[in-house]
Image 1 (cartoon, rainbow, N blue to C red):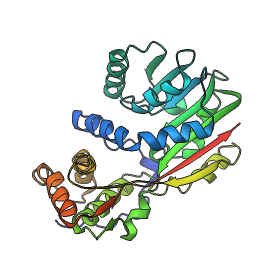
Image 2: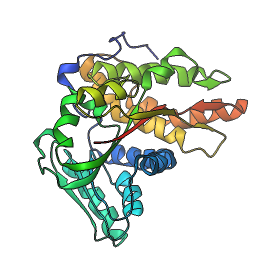
Image 3: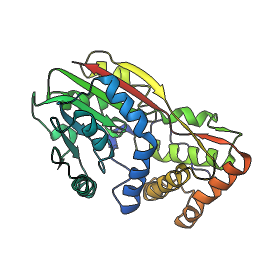
Image 4: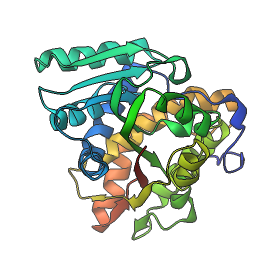
Length: 286
């Protein structure tokens, strides 16, 4: 595979959007992502103070996996409203909630900075959302106005840049190294922030919020049965249109077809492990 040109660590921050779209394959990737990060997400909400009876606002709810985790914590006496810019994602989230018979969870199509309900919520949550905002602090400042005094804010963001140093697999997986560098070039080239997690503390402060407690966390995946191989392949698939737009080259649709199995074979064959994209958890109370 031809390596993409270096687009810089964060690309052009002025043209950021959700670069992966909302295709069926991308919605599938989001579901696998939910499985991979569910435990980390639940711990973050508990530590951040999400409790029974709270009214929760979730930004960038996607297909509703984070919504389900938060809803399980607030219980039937609480409620959750998830917003997302993608109608397809909202529709998938609604179907997921309806299948579980939950009546205290709702979704709306909305941009973050266009949503204004001052003082209406007890908690604000989001996962992998601020990295896609042209000005993360401004977006957080705007949406935080919907919190009541004393409300909690819990954000989880990727710190993708950590994996580009090469310390992402043991023993070294050449294929994973290739994928990590390609994905980082696409994400950064599209304007998303590869260091969003590391910047979370300063993002909170610049948004006018109290400095948060923060923690870096990840998980290791390996063996023949890990869902991470499919997750990685689906991520590459979702990024193909953006890579083409950026002129980065690299993978094609044909390459993606066998990518999960190639990665599985390489890692399982050595008994090795892959480091999943690290995240930073941040929480504070206003």
